[in-house]
Length: 272
Image 1 (cartoon, rainbow, N blue to C red):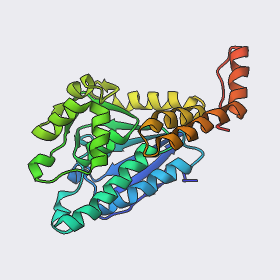
Image 2 (image 1 turned 30 degrees about the horizontal axis):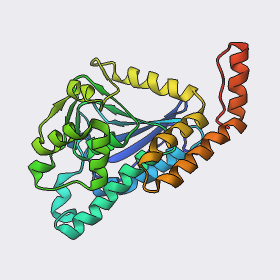
Image 3 (image 1 turned 90 degrees about the horizontal axis):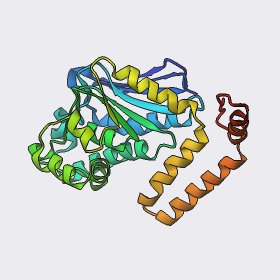
């Protein structure tokens, strides 16, 4: 179990902090001097931190956010590229760590919300695309600048982007490398909603709390069912999703849900 309020520093060039309150796990990218860009070490360690929150019984929903008010995440720390991405071989190793981070977010058994304030660029856009839900400040900006850097993103990351915005907008993001507004990202479906300036934390907290108050096993089953058709082994993934769905009918939460409905009261789900 993660101690509530715990902070876990994992790099001198930035850190990730973890905090838990009211069944919500907050994961913060904390490198404001570089717009919360992630060093190679932060990419490498991100799946471990997602796993810590995923395995903590006191966490029912996870929120990803950036420290300060200037950026969610500006992606990879480009100042490292001369060493960690100097050629095709090192780039492949680096990309595997990117892919592992995106997959940890996408495949997490618990719902993940990206709380986007300020810049959401490159790998930061990829992180947001891997999340389940995305809410942004109305002044947030979005870009995938690979074409301006002369590099390419891994296929799995591009696939997440296509799923999140559709093929046409994905092509425009990648081909033009221009900055998109929050309104444009909402219009294409990337964002579930936008928030007026100063209200983003309240909006995200309210959504996270609503999710946290619902039956955790039901939400897990729903997420698995949504992911299953796009999984590598679709048949096995769908079979697994069906098994999880069936198990909810044997749960204490199902009994509690029926009892609450009959008594016309708010259910108090325990996650078992």
